[in-house]
Image 1 (cartoon, rainbow, N blue to C red):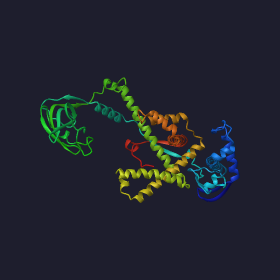
Image 2 (image 1 turned 30 degrees about the vertical axis):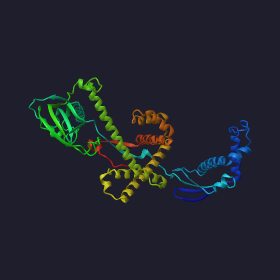
Image 3 (image 1 turned 30 degrees about the horizontal axis):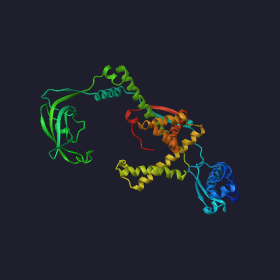
Image 4 (image 1 turned 135 degrees about the horizontal axis):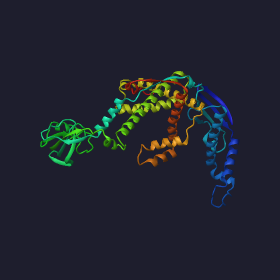
Length: 446
């Protein structure tokens, strides 16, 4: 194998690789010898097909395999000899004439272009000084959470016949709906309980029942939404003959042991303890999220090196595709919606550069500490992912078994979190108590 440096610009390297035709012929002969025992042809005993006959019948096809194997082998050897760490998959461009090469009449001659990971010294995590925002569990917050649970377990009791309904009350009703004077499927019910203000009926229906009392009969006129699921009713006006049987007042559930047992715990104290633990977990999670953002900001400030263009373009491409999809769906962030495509592109390219830079820094820090991802950690990640698809868990596991790239996508965030753990453990971290609105304030995306 002959290697010639063609060009080097920053992180981009271009080489020319030549394997002479004599060596390729030797590789072809070795491949044919290897195959002799496997080839089955009519008229020959198993394993007794002459090499010359195999060469005549399958020579070009076998040579194609030899070429592919040789390119893989020599390109890997080049990277090892030059001590290059590819940032993205190297690009191969054949110089040889394809027909002459497969016929064995030309050298294997190709150009290899590769972008490499930059050489840099990552920051020492022990020298980082970080502030971790946190807060105590607030008794008032726990009481509010308990009250919200009670509100979600409301009961409704019949009011006096003369009581008029208001938002938050329930009405027990009979109704029959008609479009153009004709009843329609699913448009009639008896003894239906409707909570006023719940928004569970066609827009405008509940509002017309506010102020009614038991015994009232009225026509409720509404228009079905244009996007209504029953296409034959979408956008049409309907009249519902409605009778109010009862008006029912809402009452929050009593906060007692019986109430707590509805949630699978022994008593009210156990329920309160569970809610407190949940609140603490939310605080700890948010505190870590904020601290991670501080760490990434610090690492971004401390590192400045050339980035592999291919990595940046790949990252930007993924981001830009999502931005365009949000734009088409009218879901762009309010600030982004005011920007031109040029400004948006510049902004998100900077974000792509930051992500690539931080990814390289975290990878290098992790490599220095020999951070590894265990099979158990990967399996746990697969299980968490599978739970997002009830009933399809086996299909999810099979997908990961067949797609190494998908497994790599699971591996990346696990690795990142382990590096963040390492940094937190090594750095000087001081806690700072803040209010809830500060701790849970949203940060801009990376």
